[in-house]
Amino acid sequence: MLTLDEQIKTGSFAPYYLICGTDSYLKQFAKKRLLKALLADDDGMNLNEYEGRGIDLAEIKSISDTLPFFAEHRVIVLTGTGFFKNQSDMPELLEAMPESTTAVFMEDEVDKRNRLYKMVAKSGCVIEQNGMDDDRLAVWSARYLGQAGKKVTRSTVNFFLQRTGPETAAVRNDLEKLIAYAGERDVITQEDVDALCPPRAADRIFDMIDAITNRQQQKAMRYFNDLLTLRESPSSILYLLSRQYHLLLCTKKMVKEKKGRDEIAEALGIRSFVADRCTQQARRMSQQEISSSLSACIQAEEDFKCGRITDAMAVILLLISCSSRKELSS
Image (cartoon, rainbow, N blue to C red; front, side, top):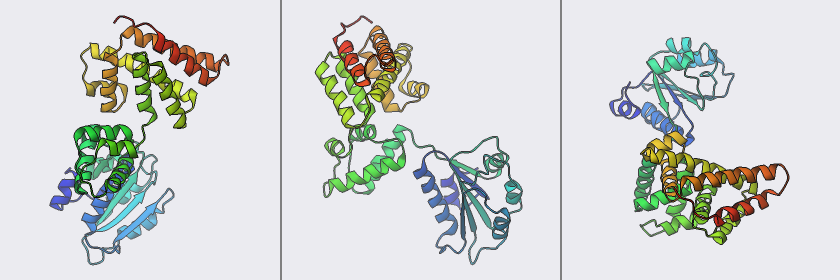
């Protein structure tokens, strides 16, 4: 089956489509492109949209059998129907659908063992949109800014992606803010990103561990206060510290095994630039130091949960203990 780009270019379309996945922006973008190609300058007369469960299949059958009005295609869009997780008569309906009608399904979750899914995958076109990896997202972001007449360096784009979420919609919204903020200036700088995109909790955890590793106790405390300002609870901060030390321990092991960035990212289920930062941080610490800090996190969590101390005090004592510890050998 041709890709969507190839279908649009050649005008050779599938009889039905499934647009699914976790990235809502990319799904809507794919839908918009597909409808524009199928309906051209149609004013909506040949487009029917349905949403939710309990859709009347008899009505869909009646609409699908209606010839398009002065156009090549009639398009039926069905969103969030549940047909791809539950059994239905939709496969039979699609088989009987005339060539002039195209069905487009929009779903968040699908069961790939489902009969309808197998049918669409075999005879139609499945467009799965689960977001872009960091390299593609960086290129897309730079291109988006370029279309607005703005220039940006790769390092600034990487810094920006650390400050925004992985969802394409969130990235796009933050890019629009940067474009508006820059005004007449044609270059987006790291200072612009810093002004508009506040650091996320994960960034401050990296900073906090760097401060701990460098025995900068006051700096570590300052980052703790920053996180409290970001409305992170002390118990959440404790969890994030434990999680980060666990990631560093795994990263340290994989670095010794000569694993690359992408292998580490895939194994740990993290983004590529996070794997880069974990690798840099793990190389500055000994395995014993990481293990000891992780054990201290576990002990602090136990003390808090058992009611021996408050969650805030657990974090404070942990930071004091880890940043005062003498450096251990690798």
